[in-house]
Length: 481
Image (cartoon, rainbow, N blue to C red; front, side, top):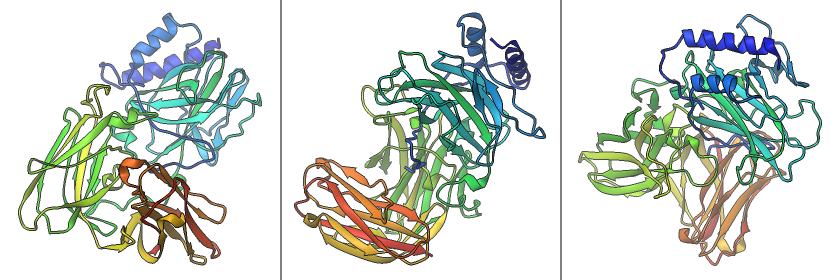
């Protein structure tokens, strides 16, 4: 054991303890698309308990980290046990390094955020395992991502992409604010089952400061305006794409219910939920639903997430056929409830929000409803061209614009019973697509993917799985508004 590392980490913990209250600390779609798979989830622990256990009980879990460098200190590479975390990666500056001891498949360490713009990098050695393995990383009560292990035995830093990037509007900072100590933890598991590995592996985690240039999918959401709704750190903007806010509410910790009143204008309604309760879900179905009632009558039931404090674009959207008469005030109630009897008790330390919007104009093509205006990645787009085809043809194509950014939208409806999966393709780029089972009657919904400017070519949507017996396929191009 490197005694200097131990002294450094104990000094770091002592400094953090002096800055905080003596109570126990909580520790441990859209997608971030990379060549390797990334996911998001969470758990709880105590920094004080971790420190005591690491030093007094569990050999090999002694802290093995350098202290947080001062802002004016040039980042240096950090080397331990034959591994190195570079001081700079992709322009990101190393803030907090951690390299596990040989054979240490699970570890945790204390960290106090000093900036609200970070990128998290991780690496693990999976030699000796019989299948794919990955290292899963948590910050506070949020699972921030995973990175596949390298089984080649090469000890160099090959994978230079972050498993997660968290900027100033990230929901991470709601529960892990800058200046408050938290716990970072990592564990190497079997990628498919999530079970802890049974052979000796090791891992490393680096937390880096980054910039707004690291944002994927476009610029940050516009700053909140005077007509936007703001509460408990979240914002529901008055206008999002073609939809207009009618009413919203946000509950902070110690409440799992939101109540507010709004006045419909006769348009169809769009429900935009936000919650942090599902941030612990790594695989499978999330454990909690949001149930919404209007004047005591069930309106919709949906899962939710919370990735950005720009709440209207953070947790998904349900735009259905729900309509309330214009003019009469309506009370909306949103409650967080367990998904099923196997779900753990509903937590009371998170955030829950709901915004109800009046849908903007839609264009119906082959039974598929396409919004005339959308917002994606903070950029507004308008519907430009649309093509459709019968469902049994299993594909439909459209020309992309030349040398202009665009959004490709594609979907289908009424394809029949059974399992269906669709995917879109532009040149050699294949977006993720969508999949549905028989209960949906083959309604794929509409997937949207942004693409950068490039020479004109064909974009195609195809049914990759399933045999449609009817219905329609639709593909569309949205251009910057």
